Image 1 (spheres, one colour):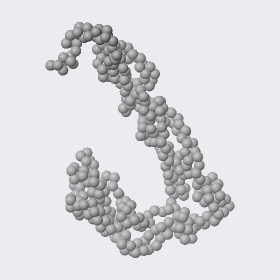
Image 2: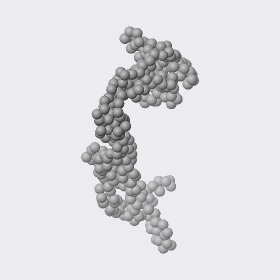
Image 3: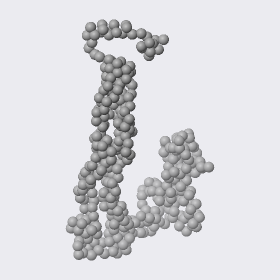
Length: 371
């Protein structure tokens, strides 16, 4: 059975946000990992599990929407949710992030190595497609500017022929550590080495091309095949086409955010398309064959006799191409019976005579309404 989140933080259900924050802060300090440096493995594990609980409790109760859902349904996800830790933090890594938000940042144990390989950042580009391009698929050339490894120094930042030395201040680690007194007691604080900029190496003569950075900004063109059936809001990831990594890390990705321009003729709902067909009173009463425009070209449909305005006619397989499937949705044609405008007195007289010739059985809806 899941624990009560208010009990986890030791507050009442009527606690204010300030009280919830204060309670969490006290527990966070109590469970700081440095306090368990000399503890047994079981004690460390118990402390980490306790942190998961208080972290989850604070995440829910500090958010008004989640708290309201929890109070009403027993889950922050509302009536369809479930109790549990879900996507909450899995250990002391998330603990440090939250402590940072309370105490203004800083390192709590030196877990990050600035000299480690780092993946390049992704590049996000919005790509606008016509409705026809989304239907048929299209090949696009995406022009971007990205960081690329310097071709002259191969990313070292050093001029050809010059030497690269291990930083004597950090011994190649890229970080400096010092002990200082904090509210938690004596702490070992880690900072980026100011002498080498966190690289762990010192370049005697910088590369003239990249000025020691190890990378350059460069224009690039990426050819992309966008498949048929895409829709607005879909993201396409082109792996390895983003910015170069640092310290030998992998390249980032190119992320295409697709936007499809609306069609003037068709409305899209998933893989189905909708359009309208205006017809006159005589064609609606007598029935007619009509040529209509589809994404596959012109097609013939039959409007049966006595068709009412608003009737939908379906053409199977004439809708939108389904993404990554060799099939199509359907096209729905809504018949709109248009009432003629600007009638002459002669036309009105003829219509009146025609109307008077009709029986009640020929107007079933009107007859039903007038009962």
